[in-house]
Amino acid sequence: MTAAACALVLVGNWAVAGEDDSNDGAIRFRRVMVPEGRRNDWPVGDARHLPVKPDRFEELVTTARAASLASEAPRAARITEARYTARFDETRRVLVGEAALSVEQAAERVALLPLEPMDLPISDARWQADPPRDAELGLSADGRLELLVEQSGTLRFDWSLCAQNGPEETAAFPLELAPALVSRLSVSLPEGCRPVAEGALVRRERSDDDRQQWDVALGGRREVTLRIERGDEEKPRRPLTMLRESLTYDVSVHGLELSTAWLLEVHGEPLEVVDVQVDRPLKLVAARLDDEPVPWTILEGGTAEGETAPAGDAADRGPDSNTANGSSNDSLSDDQSLEQVDRPTRIRLTLPKPVQGSSRTLRLGALAPLQMTTIGSYRAFIR
Image (cartoon, rainbow, N blue to C red; front, side, top):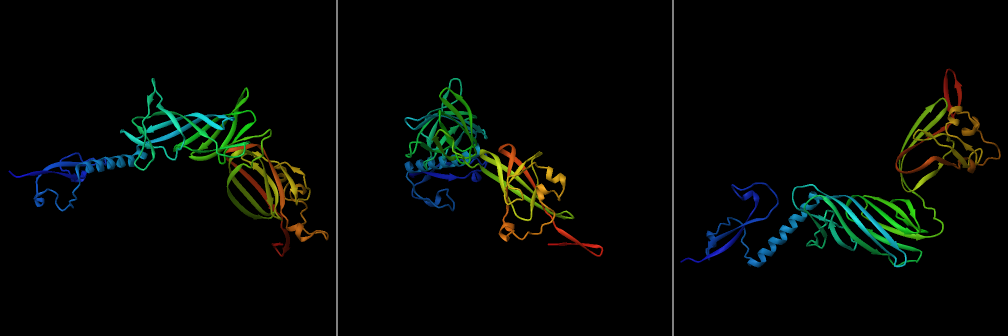
């Protein structure tokens, strides 16, 4: 009687005739009885044969299946919104709160959703339901925290975080959050404390007895350092303002006209005033925020320092207006120095209402009058 051995033959989806040809990424193999010692008769074709012990083989298959499933997880599920609430314990210098993650399952199959770079100490993870269902969390082969997603729903868990060592008047919390399209933190602070988070929109929602509720809009950011500061007066902070600029030059009988459009996006504290420098011989004649006129004040370098000019008035009076343009004669007096002439004019724009968040367009108009003389029937610009 001829001895037989069991050989395990791995076959890809593309090599299995007559079977389901859907390429779902699954690893498939067959157990085939083959004659022992007659490898030439084994159905391996030209494939390389590598002897592996049965226990080791099962371990490799399990690891490969887990890796294949993990690679498909980002496309199979995602977090559309993450809402974090926390209460600051000033004595213990710790944040204690709860999180609610809106999870969307994009495919009709079980998926593993990576939660990195989230590094919050969490507990009591559960799916929002009646009654709540325990959530299954675990570490992948490479140490990443992953969530088993069987259907769309809201994942809730408790979390806490201790402040880094630092000054007593400031508590810093490095937050590493789950990858969500939009994240928001609502934090309750004792009276006299305020949160600071660079690149985030921070606003006070309400006050309850001796505590205040603050809202921190993080957008799609996953990593941010939240600082909680104590002080009787809020320290002024420069808003984070991003702008896109477009310039248009036009030469006319009035002179060189420069039109500037700034598309503003303000993050952090609201933007209330804008300081600009206008190079000579340009002089500001108009300013508007969207459709609203913007008044301005000449701070330095103008013909009347500190004088306020309502936007639109100068433009209506034309290029010869003394308020916006000074005299039409740009000749220098004997006591004016070249340094004074070359120095730009500093102007402060007072916005009609604070600007924060959404895009707003600030438009400025400036004019550089040109001296003209007539040569025959032609006009020539002379500078």
